[in-house]
Image (cartoon, rainbow, N blue to C red; front, side, top):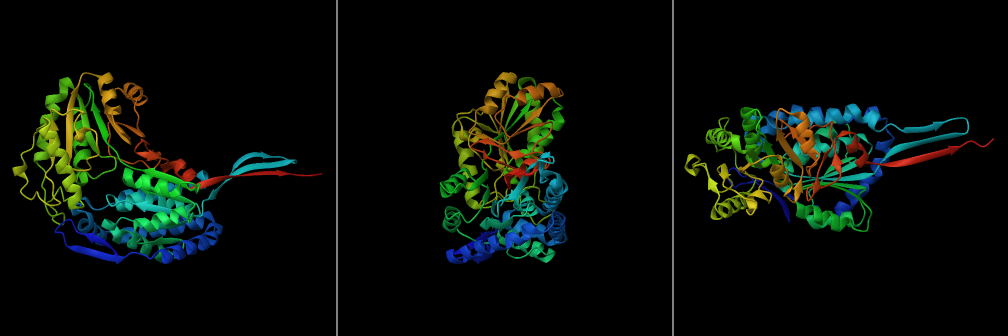
Length: 458
């Protein structure tokens, strides 16, 4: 069996790697656990320097990475790849590491020394997705390594070359091969290793179904698990919002990367007095997109990462239209549509009886509904199985904070959307998962507390 990356550009086989056999995977995990001890014994400053050297090595590869990413998962080359966010997240976690990992002093007296330290879990498994393959991976990889863990990275088949580049960069920077390993493993092998308690912690970004499989595999092992799963993120535009800014940001948040963003905007609620204007401005933006070959600098919207993802989006779209939704964008404007290429669409006359307003779409389609005010908007935003982010648009910060306290979500944005701030915990609720990455709390997830109660006998 092989790990195959089928390019969404033209359906050709871009890369293929054999799956690691179970015994070989066990040996890799054993090597990681063995080398972790010496890695954790190195000074924190040394671990930070080596991780950041590896990060900069990725930056030096960026001219090759950008078209390689386009071939793997379809993002247009005009957007320049992910290195800005990749480095921002790693650099912030490096900056706060000394403080975040410092012992907590309770008492230092002639009779007692009492304090709490943060200890690495040992070997951490990071399972990363294809949609932002560098940035999602670094969320856990950088702080895990900095905290003294060894890491096994299992990347998605669609972006298998990303794991190999990360390994090349980190090994070239001086991180030992066993301390960071990128392994091509199938799902049964991963689940077996988890069930055998080969890892001290598992960080997974992906589907709800994948998260359930991880939890089943970890059941009874007491292995820590962090899960960032699906989303159906809403935007709410209030009557005092900056309309142009709201339209520009929310529609970009819905359509960028062909809608394949963890915190992309999937549904928009607009105060009734602004609804018609919002919709017309949104239509104008989307009608200006260019759907096509992501290697062409003129392309603003590339293919989805796989035909099966595109088919899911088309099915939701057809269901919504059958149930009475009105599509505003003429598909004829996008002659490249077909296969993995999906024409962007805005839907009005939508309701929460439609899958497109309740189930994760993860494609370039957004439904827009008018609302009478905050009470209705809050109810609709919370009417979801997911809770990752919500984007609020108003000139009144106190109003936004009051609404935010009523929302079932991991992050509340005001006059912003679709951004991951490394100083804040990236987290969710409901079927979006559990745990959190980045920020000081990210280090707490990737370490365990250890208490020292030292008494002097006289």
